[in-house]
Image (tube, rainbow, N blue to C red; front, side, top):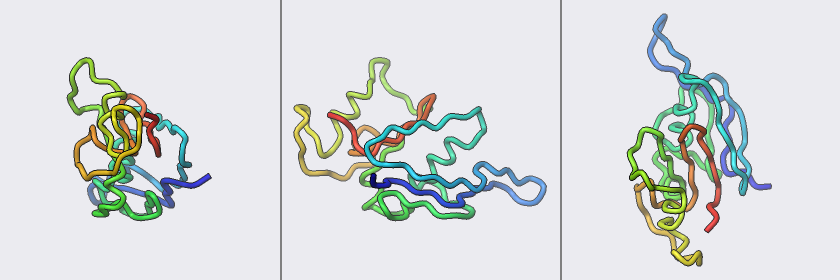
Length: 143
């Protein structure tokens, strides 16, 4: 199987000295393509921080992150293919995953492939990294 995300020795800390908070400490893993991966943990365990690191929204203190074989930080080739939907984002009450998938570049409402487009919108991305109660990473949405 191909790997869509790889993390090696990843750490993220905030603050300095006695006020240092270690949000992510020495994480290493690989996420395979065409699988759904869950990220579970209590409040404050570092789930959101890890997702922000994977999507290039935060800089790692230590370690390496590769998404589609490249660093996600300020990388349009990676970020054009990744979407991070935070639990705190507001959506209509009837908003469902099918609404995200229908608007994804690379697929039309009929499920046929079209050419990708660039968008920073959470509802327009061909590969989804989502954060709800249980963050989910999917390398390829089903139409």
